[in-house]
Length: 409
Image (cartoon, rainbow, N blue to C red; front, side):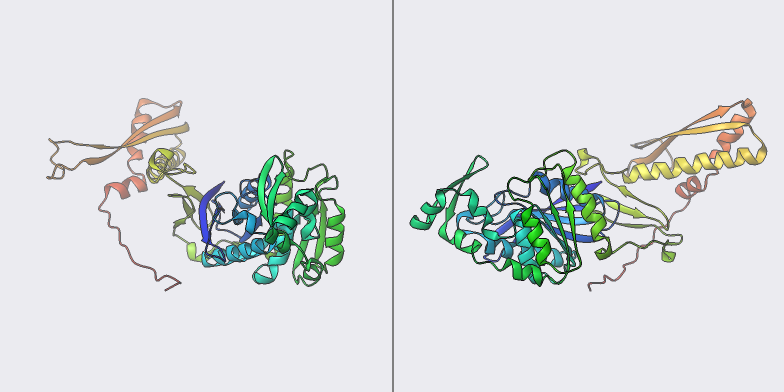
């Protein structure tokens, strides 16, 4: 289960770039990854959304964003280009780091793969780079411009139709893609490289993967995405790529402790988990999500605070009844407890607040199964009130709040 957050940041030229940050809900992120989409694609492309979501489900925070002039990002696509893409990636990495999520992994699809190879020298915190169906030469994309390339060269700009969509391209766009020292960059990458490519790719041939792999120094790996197309739209293709990336990147990721934390003994920790209201709830050995329903502005990823309150009373009630029955040899087979929280006004109640404020009411109904006598049923219902949580809720309860100094202060 993941949460998707809007994540905007400022590009090199002051333009606002629009992104989405995929966050794991059940764990704090093991690390962060930055995803670069393919040429003329957006952050909403099949590969971007599927891979980001699958990696987030594996415990990675993943930022996918629109390059300058595409999707929801500001700027002029016609005057952008490969150099601009690299600058956008550098700005995205800095924004992630300022957000407390320095990217340890750079992932690029198609021309985005060439961009992450070029941007890696500007992202020193990244330990690994992944390319998906990426070209070796940055000017590979020009092969799909056809006769429009001559028009752009001669007139300074022109229209290019790709995938049924028309884009305005300037001469500066062309110039940015030429004479890029990709071979030298790959040879001097200085970090682990995973090259993933579809052998049947008709847009960027698999020979590009061979050239990237041969230019790179170890550590390097190659995985064939057999049967997939260039955009990874076949069912399961993007998810398979994400599974492979997560496994390959494991050595770079910051793991949560594998052993129970001793400082959790007897305590519960609650911390924000992404989204509007979602919270991590952690004990010494367990963790889960609490949230609010969508009708209250939440994402309904887990039980509400009052659900948990009722669950505490219900589980304690059932455990207490079962414990007593076992000790006394009462043939109790099972216990089912239904609980509901409400607020009622009782004007004639002598215990009511004199201001007329509503009383908090917890209704509890108990079903006992087994060959029980009326006396045994009566006694077990009486024992329900001996539940420790019941006593806590009805007793004189004081809640003491103290401030923990922030590590940032």
